[in-house]
Length: 328
Image 1 (cartoon, rainbow, N blue to C red):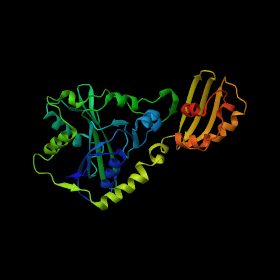
Image 2: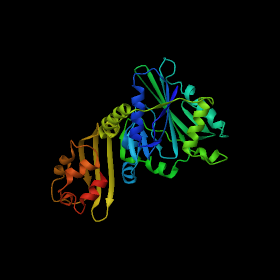
Image 3: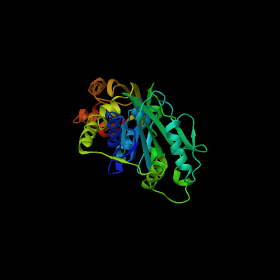
Image 4: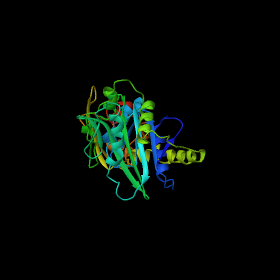
């Protein structure tokens, strides 16, 4: 096994997801371990509804990237206080769903630092009842990726805000995350440690003190990785459009307007139907406004373009275009 040296430990999540996919499909029989730190981001599982997992408006405002990964499982918030790891190995047919094979050495390395870490359930590492690592797997073409998080000094308040969508707004059959009580590893250390020191400790432990041989990404590697970033991980259709079909409903009482109730049916990220209810007054038929939204991506930038120049207050008396956008 070789550890991957990507040069800069701190990269956008879209780049780190692309590096993993590239290594998985590299056509090599070599095993790799890849450590990385994401800039602030929410990573959602392959089969999840992005809108049900994140407060999209908060993430957009705070510059928190939302990225869909290849593997299943639940959503996680990561930032510079979170060290992530990925084991990319041959899939010999017995390791898929065998998380313990990969995460037990990580738990042992933490115990060597005095952290009473234990592998629990199917794919977590915990200290008591508090979770410090979650893990997921993905298999393809005879290769297996097992990746996970280590919450060293995560901004837990920001995590809570980013992972708290307006639950009453969405209804779907998507795989929703089960929230666990998260702890920072820093709480259990006798001496402070940063993510770089934690990576160095894990490498020493996993390679049993021997000199670990790095694999340094080449310019050709980076060319292919950048292509993956552009085509998949910074692509709205992948990150949001692949969300399962769902209903979106928001009802709000607006001072001077009345109650506005908007109901949308969204499939593959596209609005397929729109109905607006309420006790407001309007000069123009609501059907005209509803038809403008049908067939458009459920994305603020696209809806803003559709509504540019539209006097929303003629349909919903007293409601500005900006307030209608926020409502959607």
